Amino acid sequence: MISHRRAASPFLYPSVAGSPSPPSPPVSAAAAEIEPPMAALTRLLPRAPLTSRVSVSFLQRCSSSSAPASHSDSQISPPPFTFSPNLTRRDPKDRNVQWVFLGCPGVGKGTYASRLCNLLGVPHIATGDLVRDELSSSGALSDQLKEIVNQGKLVSDEIVLSLLSKRLEAGEAKGESGFILDGFPRTIRQAEILEGMIDIDLVVNLKLREDVLIEKCLGRRLCSQCGKNFNMASINVKGENGNPAISMAPLLPPANCMSKLITRADDTEEVVRERLRIYSEKSQPVEDFYCSRGKLLEFDLPGGIPESWPKLLEALDLDDYEEKRSAAA
Image (cartoon, rainbow, N blue to C red; front, side):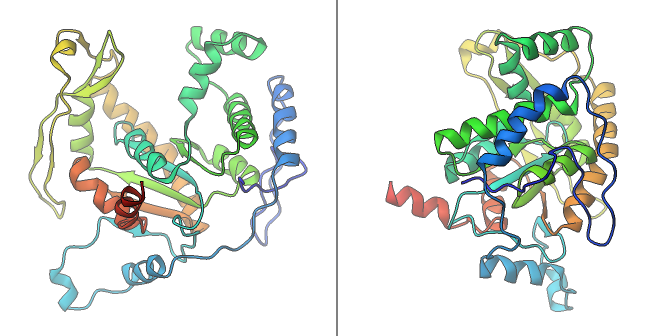
């Protein structure tokens, strides 16, 4: 069962203890289409519990990660993950999860979120996919989206949240008991509205050095025939200024795709740097928002998938879960 927080209106900003709620944003014409699915979601789902049980080993690592390092500890490399103060969450081995994955463009949110979804048996929900699915359908909202996209405008929060609420409602009807959101929320307003709708257990913020991110983005390729993504960059960055060395092997295409590879028009160094700047500007308030609520886990990718995946499972207290699940299959 998906945990949800009831509210008189899904677009009221949730109150912070000791302070009044800011006024809700004006309802646009698009909001008229949003309220029915939001209201249905409110009726359908129960209120989330205010507290939740936490895995003991996870909390022990959380406490130790925030404790001052002793002299003997200073010689040991720190883990690639840090926790927000007083982080609490449910044990993913005992229940399905309601997580959010954040991170810069090109960091690999979709890759790691998808792997975790397969491991935990929950759906991978990316708002970009929801928009593309709606564009391929018919109806008033689809027509509105096509007009927005054709004009080069950004899709409004109201429309994105409408699509998300309908997706969660459909998942609830099918018996889904959790999810991982990929790359959403992106702004503080989206985070505040989402917090009033759903009880998010944990927010995983994937991080990677900017020079590595740029090299990785510039190596991206798309097969014009099958639509799969590949990466031609072979990254070997030396450690300097306190940053560890990072190596990432290329994700090469099969021979039949090699001659059909294309580069995205916006994958230039200038555009990539600007995307990262804008993301950093908008994401910091979102990270602070979840950190203040004890829900943020920051994970520095130590390398490619072979190096990062085991470390990520360790950070999430799932390092023995993959092996046990495979053995039980």
